[in-house]
Image (cartoon, rainbow, N blue to C red; front, top):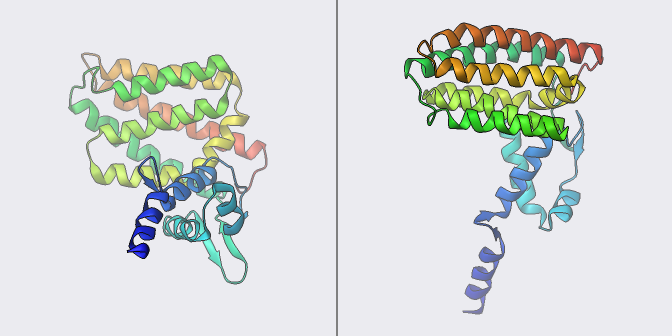
Length: 237
């Protein structure tokens, strides 16, 4: 009975806010990888991360295996766990794919004749972007911008488009964060305005006009990100 009680206590101890320790470790490490908390090619010490998170190594190792399956880290024999770098070529090629997916998503949204209620995730994201502009926080702005673009894919209603789009957005999210920090303020202001304009078009009597508008915004955005990273001479992130 004592062993059974101890097992129950351990299960309870392994939960925080309904999440297991593996989930906590996974979410924490994933966010740090995606938002440039670790540099490109950085080695992750599971012992140090376990100590930082206040848990044993086991859930941290399990979380790292999940991140390896997502292609965010790689296990190196006798060296540990390495953050997979993203090259400028990776970013350039994935941006082209994301543009195609987002334009398709906007077309699917427009066909639904969306209401303001349906577009509330996008509206909330632009409010958060404006709040970040006022506070001067580029990382908060980038988080809100990420929510906007993921929201476009989610609202498309196409499960495969959503899964593919979010997976590839995650693949280059570090590049987005780094580029966002390097962008001038007026570029973030303009980008926020184009996001708001897209919502207005989707709510208009001719929501199909949003399709080409978004295509143009995406192509322009691609150019700014690529040029920003090139000027900074960042070959990998």
